[in-house]
Length: 401
Picture 1 (cartoon, rainbow, N blue to C red):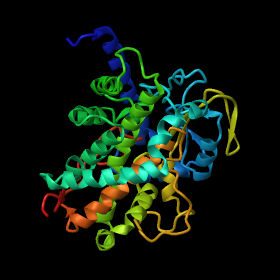
Picture 2: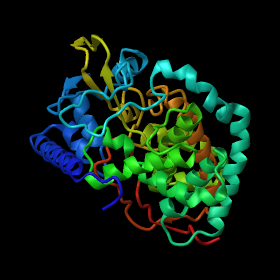
Picture 3: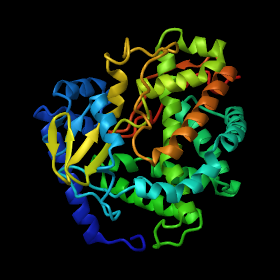
Picture 4: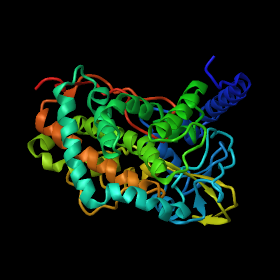
């Protein structure tokens, strides 16, 4: 038995997670589209449309208030009454279905000024421009030795982890361990809304603790040092966001006739491809908040402690905001900004890093592998309502020069 294991605690948590998954399944069978989203599907966008049809905001049978309305979501994201945790940093009160829940350090407004200097030095325009050169070197290095035909394991994840590790100053010898921990922690945002298997919950906990230790933390102390907190945040949020942003972009480019050819002819379109991916199929699909006080949204009065889920990905498919919302187009202009990466101050350091790394990764891939083409259906992880990206994306032409 692993050191520190607690069979009684594992039994209690495992039973609670199992009961929650069963409840979720029943509520989905009974027709609640949000419950179906929490169970996981390869294509959640029809369910987002069904949520939108229930009005600008509605009470799901899961106990959460849910909105897929872009105006309501934008208003809630801008209102400090909607928080990620209690005012003292304590976990949000447990709802009917969410479980492994705690506030994200740095996510609240009162943490913003304290942490800003610790990530701004890494991500101001000048250091970020220099980092693009590092990302380019990592992309070329991965492509030089890639084997197999899975874009995610062969390119997207290795680039995201190696580039971020370099930015954070990790020694090269720590990269294999770092990459493993980042992937193990990738389901953390999903666990805040959808009950995960016990083994995965424990793996997430171990991965977050392992990342803290990798950056100099002491086991059992928690991530209180601001520099470590920022590094753990970038590792658990920006690394998977970058990997999934690359995967979602390549999948969409290959699925839309002529889109990949257009990028291959003009790799300078990589920023447009990233921006369109953030609209069409972003790596972060929704945000969850808790009301710190009474709030009014779309004419509905919500009491303190109300749990609100903002389906931010649905805004990009709103036909009143975007013509041909289901099409992936590189020529969009003058349309509203997507709500991807709009939620919470913790996205301030994540958004510029993920966008910069994904833009470089797409440009290098288009320049060096113009003949990449799909070779099979992508595979998605179940019970992943928040973080969206393929686990596997089979392609041909990745390993050939």
